[in-house]
Each structure stands twice: as C-alpha cells, then as structure tokens.
Length: 151
Ligand code: HEC
Image (cartoon, rainbow, N blue to C red; front, side, top):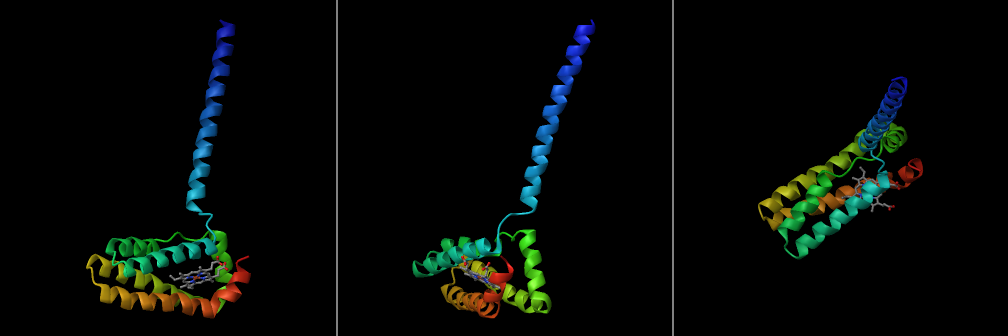
C-alpha cells in the first residue's frame, strides 16, 4: 500500500512537471509573438520588396499584385520594442515630422490598394509617386542619424 502511494506521488509530480514545462513554453512563445524581434532595418527591407512588387504590378498591369503588395506595406510588421525605444529617444522633438513621413507612405499604400481594387492605373501611378517621395523624404531627413541610433 505504502509503495503504491509513493508511486502515485512520484507519477503526479512528474505529470505536474511536464504540464508546468509545456505551459511555460507556450507562455514564452506568446511573449515572442507579442514583442516582435524584427529590427527597423528588416521592416525597411520588407517595404523595399513590397515597393518593387508594386513597380512590377504597374509595368505588367497586374492589379492583384499591386493590391497584395500595397496590403503588405499597410500591414508591415512593427519593429521590436527595443528598436522603437531607441527610435523615439533619437527623434526626440522630431517625432511628429517622422510620423508625418510614415503617414504619407501608409496613406499612400491605402490609396494604391483601393485603386488596384478599382483597376484604376492612373490613380495607382499618381499615388505610387507620392509614396516614393514619402520614402525618400524620410531617408534624406533621418536615415543617416537613425542608422547610428538604431545600432
Ligand atoms: C518615417 C521614415 C521612413 C520612411 C517613411 C521610410 N523609411 Fe526606409 N529607412 C528609414 C530609416 C531611419 C532607415 C535606416 C534604418 C537603419 O539603418 O537601421 C531606413 C532604411 C531603409 C532601407 C535600407 C535598409 C538596409 O538594409 O540598410 C531601405 C531599403 C528602406 N529604408 C526602404 C524604404 C522604402 C521602400 C520606403 C517607402 C515605401 C521607406 N523605406 C520609407 C526611415 C524611413
């Protein structure tokens, strides 16, 4: 009888341990997803590939390609919290200017997506030009300084 009790205690301890470990692993996985580990530079590289796809969509008159690429810009991943903190610190009083450029790109992508749905190439090209200006304006104003700050 005593032996059986001992076995049962050990078994439940082992089960508790496994359950504990797997719950912990799940929690860690969730934490990783919440605090993305994407760097700002990786977000930018993603924007470049989406932008290239919009160009390709325009040239080939492939509206669905334009639409999905614009969608990719609209919903681009957020950089990791640690990167955002560095960014905010470096930008200080210039945050509003930075966000303004970001809004040009984001708003432009929304208009491009809508125009692609409407199969309106004239609007796509007009908005595409503004989008590129948004990328370029932010780069000339902030890129060099922020590349250093984000390291
Ligand atoms: C609000 C500001 C801002 C906007 C808008 C912006 N960028 Fe950037 N971009 C940056 C900064 C800052 C860096 C430097 C990041 C670094 O070095 O870590 C950068 C760097 C880059 C890089 C270089 C990445 C590398 O590997 O060195 C690419 C490519 C890029 N951006 C593409 C784009 C494209 C395409 C758009 C428009 C669709 C865009 N960016 C819009 C701020 C911006």
